[in-house]
Length: 234
Image (cartoon, rainbow, N blue to C red):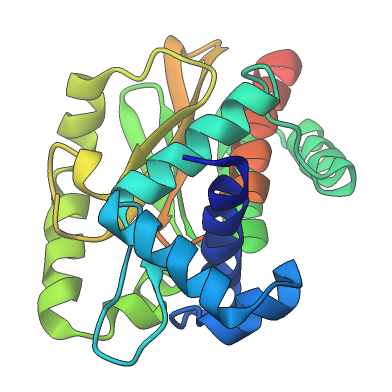
């Protein structure tokens, strides 16, 4: 993939996250200050390589799971494996966590903060239990208005706790995109989760579950920094 194609893919992903609609060549031509024909040629190559797809005739393009994976890997590599969250938001989370009365309440406060900031479903392990919040955020996303799609997501949520035990995320930040999830492969969701140590367990997790269409740069940064904040405060 050329440098321009990589930038084009990143722009498609970021625009799609913002507007929840396929991204067309006219908008991209303006953003890149090149002709629509040039953009169409580049998009055709990205589609041939499997990084984007056309959901229906005469539509723009949307990312595939492969495209998201390439994008996420690039984000991680360009930040030397460490994502940086928005300073104001991470400070707000740290203050909220520090003011909590107990370890369990601190973890719940962190999850609730992630729900508010990312508009995703938030989750964390509290000892041997799983705390989940923000169901309305997840099912309120346009991707999940289709009943069959919603059932796929619900099936994934029903099996989320045993899957987390099986997956055992072992990095400070773990991203499972769409079909990479061992369960709910067709649910069209991504799990962004951080491992951290707490008084309750050395293998504690906190993160968010949302549609594959989301702002990975900011969400990844928030999740990783929240995990670090919990580890430092607890």
